[in-house]
Image 1 (cartoon, rainbow, N blue to C red):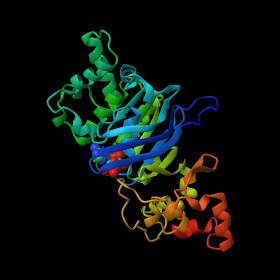
Image 2 (image 1 turned 135 degrees about the horizontal axis):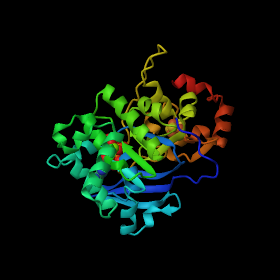
Image 3 (image 1 turned 135 degrees about the vertical axis):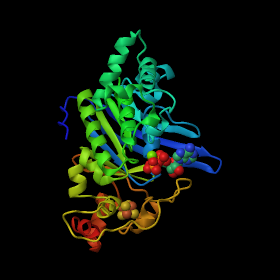
Image 4 (image 1 turned 90 degrees about the vertical axis):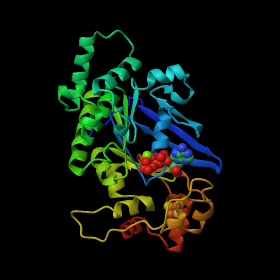
Length: 350
Ligand SMILES: Nc1ncnc2c1ncn2[C@@H]1O[C@H](COP(=O)(O)OP(=O)(O)OP(=O)(O)O)[C@@H](O)[C@H]1O
Ligand code: SF4
Ligand SMILES: [Mg+2]
């Protein structure tokens, strides 16, 4: 785990009410619908949630790499003091790779199969940090980058088709971290790898992050794997953050019924307990239902959930949730009705 940031250090990233739609012929797909959070210097931040909940759409927008029909409709993203959404194109280009770098989902499949590893690395470096590099100086720099991701110097002369999946992913990490960015975003960096290689790549990624002194956003489906690596975790559902807190807060006291179900669906080596699955499907993000988007699947759903969307708010130091069960007025009403005792339903739901 990383050291806690000093209280005087500004956040590395601050996302404010970001909204992203895909404008399709059938109507707008509301892929990201009012997301806010921040990441401190050196922090490791996890983003988890079911397929299609908007994780990749969200982080791609941080680099202004959203492709049509995707449109960033509203919100702000600050990298330090700089608001990225309002930068000119050339200013944004200078930020990419130098300050904020993305290892996109499926990155290892997008390496050019007919270009040697060293030439692909050289292209990235020369485009984003243009200056005169003597050939020998560049070769040494590339060997250093490969060494940082635990690859032998001869890999520089190979083509991607000569590399294993784990080696290709290491090349992608070397590329994204070549210019020592302040923020590294890794979108499901290990999902196509076997379990042993997954762990090795994850360890190497965090070692490189430490060496560079960057913050990390790690995206994954596997909440267990992500939680082993990160300090804080955001659980996304249908384009919104359902819950956000430290790994300790989320594991010890998950607040949102969706988080509780996600955790109870994980295998536990210590406890013998039945694993629960989440019934139903996530809502279509074209014309999503009214109220809380989780209500059709939620075992705790109340009448209010069907017509009023819950507010996302902080319920404990740094622990945020969007659920009516934690509205102050609602807690009172439900307590009076005797239908909900704080602290007990959470254990029942797990
Ligand atoms: N080009 C597109 N046109 C229309 N809809 C899109 C497009 N790309 C993504 N979407 C929709 O936007 C939503 C969010 O997609 P996104 O890829 O961000 O999800 P994700 O959480 O990264 O999923 P996964 O875990 O499968 O990678 C989904 O409902 C998806 O169908
Ligand atoms: S707001 Fe209602 S439906 Fe949504 S998660 Fe909370 S209890 Fe369930
Ligand atoms: Mg994705």
